[in-house]
Image 1 (tube, helix red, strand yellow):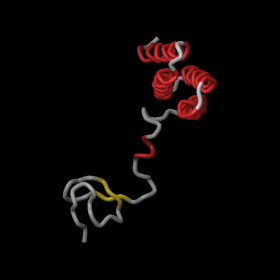
Image 2 (cartoon, helix red, strand yellow):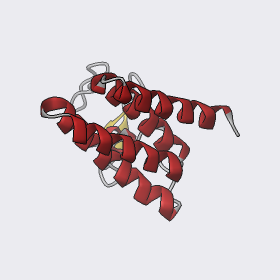
Image 3 (cartoon, helix red, strand yellow):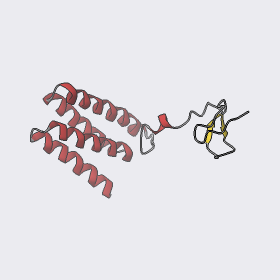
Image 4 (cartoon, helix red, strand yellow):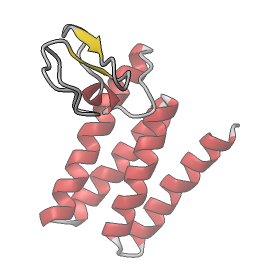
Length: 131
């Protein structure tokens, strides 16, 4: 078993222990760490375990912790669908939101060589003005 898988198991075990000790907020932080690591590893079992922890937190909490646990469950469920379908995502599932859309035309700034939108009149990186 790889180092990352052992780290995943240890993190989720710690989340369960924290919940058993009556520390749902700490459990939630550990469960989020475990869920993100499981998503990065594309580990179905790890995602399922993170979902179980999220559901247990929901049963024992209300308010913000409850809402955060629901968000964790949705996140891991979404990643689980991808993992079971064999879809590999980047290390960060949110990275696709940060990348420029491939449908938008792009151009290179002649001053700083950064890629910007073709319709830009001013480079957002260096301030170069296009004619």
